[in-house]
Length: 315
Ligand code: SAM
Image (cartoon, protein in one colour):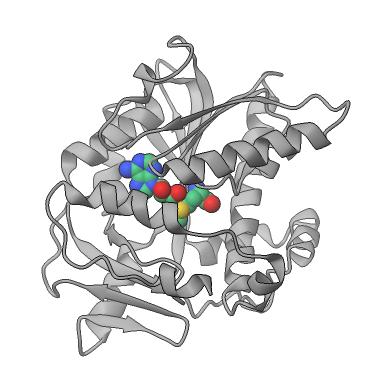
């Protein structure tokens, strides 16, 4: 029953109308009961994405923990708090969660409150929650402590929403990076623009997909650096406009914030690499992420790529 509300089409967009629509879309997303969710045809892909995020986040936190005890994280585009358990497992000290969708931020906060209540004697990280359009507003002006510094900014399946205009992409990047400590990391996952365009070019219309997902571009053969819009529909679960992120441009833009690229892989490459590790393999089994990704790691779904940035300020 959640599906009909979720597959709602947003139609064409006015220049500044987009952020409002992204917020209202995510605000109307309902929590699915576990049964319903597990019946979903995309459950394995969700689990797989979750496994990828767990491995990426785990590795980065391990690295930061090697040089310090207290770790402070910014979850940029936190949604309903899908990564809260990962932050707990990663023994961080402090978390700031930010998202454009107020209802999602509230859900994130109540998940955190529940987690805290159930943690009994275990010391759990402190957290703060901010509702903001991170492509237009500066988080530094909304933090409880304006001097706060982060060791990691995590931006999972979010950054591509900012590539509508150069200004928005820059503001998002600024929010991600300006409060990072030297040596801090900006990690994230976004759809793979190369793969999207490759599949579009191979199609005889302006859209491609399968029984599970559909991607529809507004135009073919024209790929502006910003505002290159496409709609992504995954079984009616997500249907808001997204924008291509031309990765080399993103890397250049990040230099302004003293960031240098230390790591970039497609999901397929990441999977092949990380599944060699026994602990990761066990985690994958536990997360039931295997069906969609058999031994060769091939996915029939749009592939994405994780990126990992090291903050190289005055290094
Ligand atoms: N990071 C979460 C995760 O991995 O589960 C949520 C990912 S969800 C696909 C995308 C999120 O980006 C949504 O929660 C949405 O509200 C948020 N978002 C989109 N545009 C945003 C913006 N301009 N500022 C802040 N958050 C934004």
